[in-house]
Length: 272
Image (cartoon, rainbow, N blue to C red; front, side, top):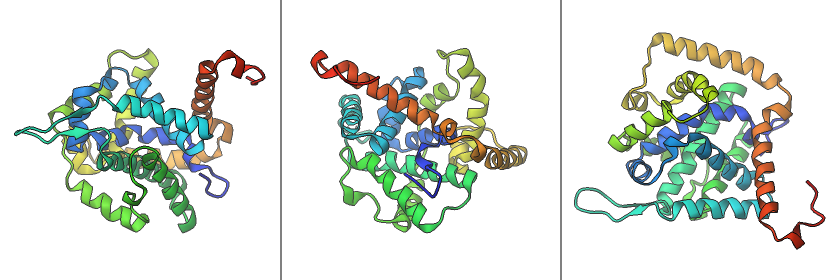
């Protein structure tokens, strides 16, 4: 996913938007219920982050074997996430194409938001390339290709329509609280959480920030803009090997897993 000399999809700075993407997903009532009732990812956020980003990198950057493996992993995780509707609430299924569209849309819009904060507005061709690459995240699963909005203008209309339907229900609020104030994580994860909560609040649309009970004021807003200016100045100056380090880590880990799963006869001659 290249844009000039910058491979935007590989940029580790996209992790700054991880909380935003997750809370946007949870604010979809069906996704929020499905996660609250079936997932324990709030108790193991590092595993969830690694698996999500391994799927993203494996789908966009991986070879055919890697892409097939991450697709199998996600489908296996999604299989039990379903419930029939009843008189009080609608049902849900993780295989629902509309929900997969929403999840992929949050990943794209969050990446676009972070990229433009750091690198400024993208030119049309680069923005179109980034957009089409993110279409793979849904269409690699059960999302029919024609459900992905055909261009960025169509996506903008879809996005605005969806924002009007979002609200943080009790299940979503409970998961978000556990996610933003985790208990069973290493000390260093606790240390970065105040910054993660601040960035998550800053990147979220204001109504959802309020819905999720995230504190925000004029002082927070000014601090957020100062932080973005500093990052926009300093981050692009880092070497590409550092900026792309998490993508490379995830793909290398995926490749090690695949080699370990092959029969010994197939592993011979494969370099480390």
